[in-house]
Length: 64
Image (cartoon, rainbow, N blue to C red; front, side):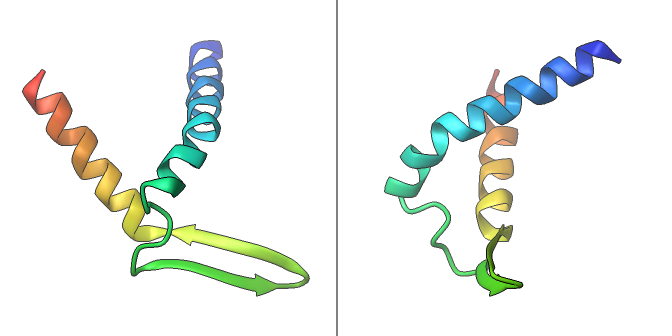
C-alpha cells in the first residue's frame, strides 16, 4: 500500500514539473482538451492530451 502512495506521489510530482514544458510544446491546447469556468474556478479536462501521451508511453514501452 505504501509503495502505491509513493508511486502516485512521484508521478504527480513529475507531471507538475513537466507541465510547463508540455504547454510550450502545445499539449493542453489540442482539440478535445476542455477548459471552462464553473463555480468561480477554471476547470481543465485534457482528454486528447491524455490519449496522445498514453499512446506515446505505450509505444516507448513496446520498444523497450
